[in-house]
Length: 162
Image (cartoon, rainbow, N blue to C red):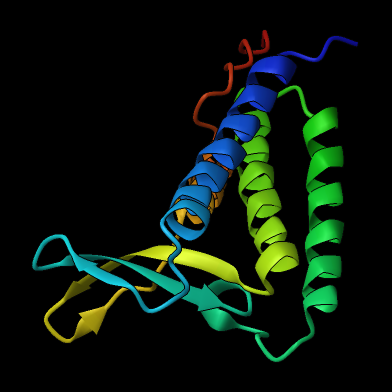
């Protein structure tokens, strides 16, 4: 059985992981950001450092780091098995982007005890949640999975003769 898009999708996941790690290394290790730093870029976008102890929106932040790590490990293994088995282009790329982002956020929990988030969009009194490059990779990966579910990007089966 051939594994189409195996290497190229793997590279996409590695790129998502590397971009997120590079940005976090730059801000935390090189520039020494600790949390609470704030740079107003525009009237609707700030570049900040916020530590997220949980998962999305701080959900389950009261759980110990090892428990969140275990959940992440189980999810990553499950997604990895799915990635290995699927021949579908969008599924394979979507899964690997999600895996790359999840691995980087999991590494944050291991290194720092929380996930480093930087990008904050807001408008007047509305504040969108603060996120990072790994979150963007995960979100884009899920979008690719949804597109595949909707049949976009799949080869159409030839019509059956009547």
